[in-house]
Length: 315
Image 1 (cartoon, rainbow, N blue to C red):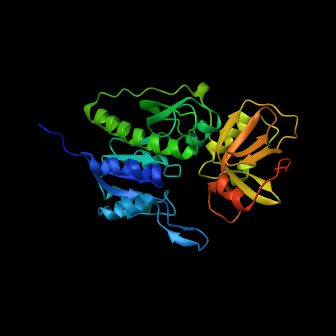
Image 2: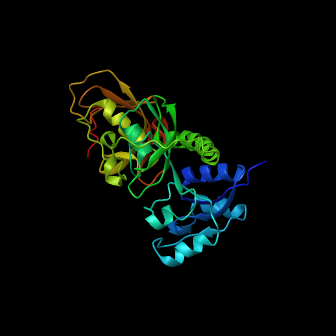
């Protein structure tokens, strides 16, 4: 006898969550409602923009809820009307109260973009790249009241590429997380998953990043700066200043070449990129985004804006 499809409420907001929502929509169970963040003003025109999950949900007729407060009795009772068997959370952006964690018979499960207990918090994928990890993955947990502290239901790992950016890793983990989630839901239905408590002594945190975190200190080792640039691509981006104007940097490559020049000094700039002296070794920058302009290859920028050897990229 086949099992009845689960009734699932999904809570999530950005592209990472949209990939997970798409997997649930295409899967055997029924997504009865989406809970996501309110529309936000974006861009220079401050146009009100819906979250990616909302766009997807509305395209297939799934009811969308965008509460400004989630700890109210009204919101709780509203969710009950959907008669959920399970709540699935992926990058929703808020801590859920105990009342919501216990609302569905199967509870709440979360798709987290790290191998917990590593990188608890809002930015696990970026911090994995920032720290130069060679392996990362996703963890499906049974949610508890703490920040990513719940019991582990399932894990999946992936190797990171040497030139991995936060953006490219987001895409890979979104796919991996979606597939792993479907396995976990099947295991919950079958009763084959055995929750495993996290070792809290091994926990590390991955706090939200700020724009100022991208300011480059050229006195650091080239490898550390390279990880910073990749870890903050596409947001909030790593940057320095050229002629007092903000210059965002992308596509870095470490060159094991020492220089006596002051850290931040341009050693040369040509069609290959900008060669910059660091505290240790040299960094080659292949793409940039000058202030007020689009991202481009260094070669394109140099056609109209040559950078002389000896120029100092400042903080």
